[in-house]
Image (tube, rainbow, N blue to C red; front, side, top):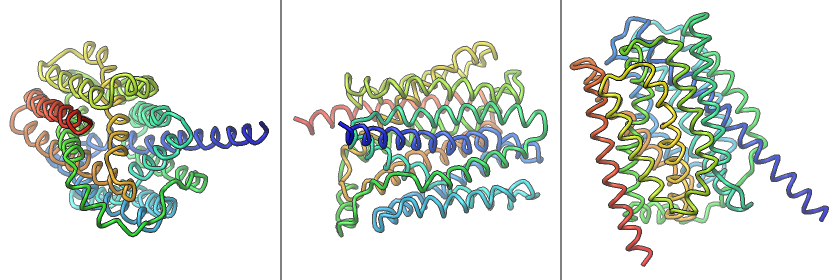
Length: 392
């Protein structure tokens, strides 16, 4: 009994540490990604220039996220990679606000993305493995990321209005440093290198279910990520304020937390792919609605739907990848999925969105992105039937 209590205490403390890590890591993301487009616009850049800088982050992510994953799988070095990369990101974050040209803004943001792109797939891999081994719910950890993002985006908006938008970089750096200190206590969960990485990678790209999920994430979640960049332009276009942008992200991201807590139960009851389809449907309807030029009040009231789209999609997708990917390349599989689905998708639709917003207007942009998201729903329906056939 004493040993069981000690074990429970250890599990509980590790769960709290993992939750704290998600919280502070996404505080950094919330402060940076929600306010950086407005910071760049305030420095005299056009919407297309600001969008192109934001799109460089995903380009770098596409290249480096799989590399960080392969290093972790090959050398079982998750904690060392996290410490090195997050320190690198924090260092560049400290000097970002001193840049004064489009090229420097571009290069510095690419450097930050290069380093902080390691965080999500490594942390997800550790968390998925730890929760599965100890009978805990991954969604109860991931929700702390949503809370951190919400708190940071709201707080960054208020601080930016009270001081100036360069304050977002100090929030980013501070949160990254906290994560560096927390890294040592993370559980060491990855399996040791088995010598079959090349075989596992080859096998991975011949798994139709994995490829279909990546494609749907490219379409559905890529548009969600593009919204994080475009939303400030949209919200000010309908009469909102900079502080209102931060409050919007607080409500939207904050609504993800309770949904993520319930995600495990919903996945067990209905299955991973039906949950993914529901999340994608809600997301698609949201972008079409934004294209109708709604009022600020209506937009604020309906921000909670992000909880359904993001709060269900992220845990369901991560668990599905863990189920279909070869054991020896779990971190790599999550890294490639995140790079292509989130990174390449975010890059593509952020760039397209910026060009459309400059050429037409932000409302036409959201209508077209809504259509893209609907195509992603169709891909998930195909995945449902492919998965059903595979199981039978």
